[in-house]
Image 1: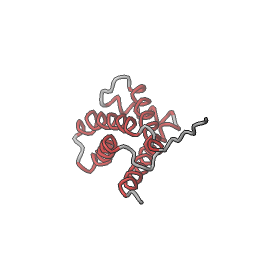
Image 2: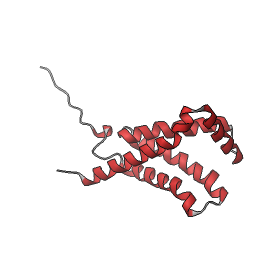
Image 3: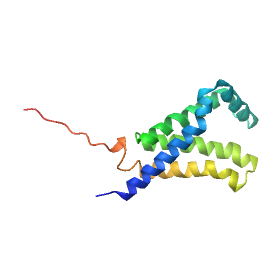
Image 4: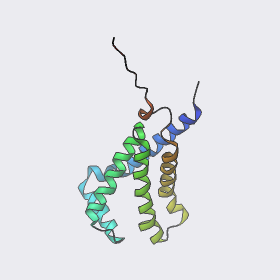
Length: 136
């Protein structure tokens, strides 16, 4: 029988995984982009801006890959939720961003928050069936 809820979670996982990976890939592939991001973070009084930039980018990258494949989904979602909560508080709310400007970060935050509660669904590495064969 088709599990419609798990298909919905798979769609959300694919969307969020691909979207966040796309959003950080330029920083992963280019040190100059990473330095620009660190400069951006320094404007908002992040401690150790270069370290904060690397930490944020690689948390997003690794957690998104894990969510995409459905492995350790709740843990990965918790790391992403924390990352985006910090971004919302430290950058978006301080900047007085409009709802339209808040929406991408807020949407990612809400989706990963939901994944913390739901898990990956049926179609994920988290839920693969492990069978053992007993020998006698």
